[in-house]
Structure formats: structure tokens, C-alpha cells
Image (cartoon, rainbow, N blue to C red):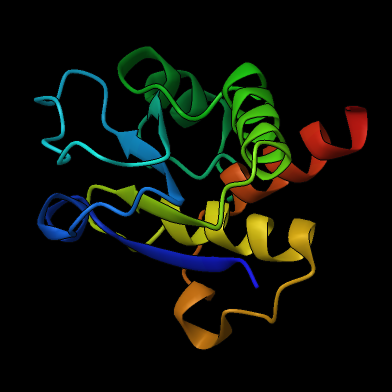
Length: 144
């Protein structure tokens, strides 16, 4: 059985590595590099802001947000999808997903991974997931 966990940046930095667990590390652009301990199966680094572009906003505000922040892109979502599928193919036993606070982006990725791999739902902890990130992952997984 594949194990799956999501957490904050601090939680990930404090987690002892597992040579059978791959990490999806989501950080804000411009933030200091995460200090993950050595010994993980593999690590994918993604840099994007916690911006949910699925929320209804007017065009002016959307333009302002996009001028200052970088939400997850379709290319980054495709990278996550390819990484997860490749890790499973290579014999990975689980995933640790983290973002800065562990409340929006990492639950979105973990929710998608659980669905992709047929794992049990992660429950109420994923209710705050970033719907933009989740939507991009679903779209990327259908494309390839």
C-alpha cells in the first residue's frame, strides 16, 4: 500500500527521510530553499504562489494578481503528474507533499495523488485545498 502525507514546509524539514518515499516540495518563488534531509527516494521542487485562480475575481484584480504572483502553471502541473507516475513506476512506496503552510497547495496535490492511485480519500484536511492546483493536476493527468 502506498503511503501519502502532506505537511507544511517546517513539517517536511523536520521529517526524517525515508528511502522509499518521494517528496513533492512546493515553495513560494523567491523563498529560501527548503532544507530537506538527504535520503529521500526522489524530490521534485515546484515554485509557485498559493493563488487560487478558480475563485471568481474581476479582470482588473486578476491582472494585478498575475503581475505580482505566480500561480501554478499547466506545465508545472504536468511536471507533478509525470513525477508521480514515474516514481510509482520506479517502485516508490509513498509520497510526502509539502508547501509553505501545508494548508492549500499540498492538500491539493495530495488529494490528486490519492485519487490517481486509488487511495482512500484524505478526509476533511483537504477541504481547504487550492482548487486551481487541483484542477490543473486533473487536466494534466487526462492529457498524458
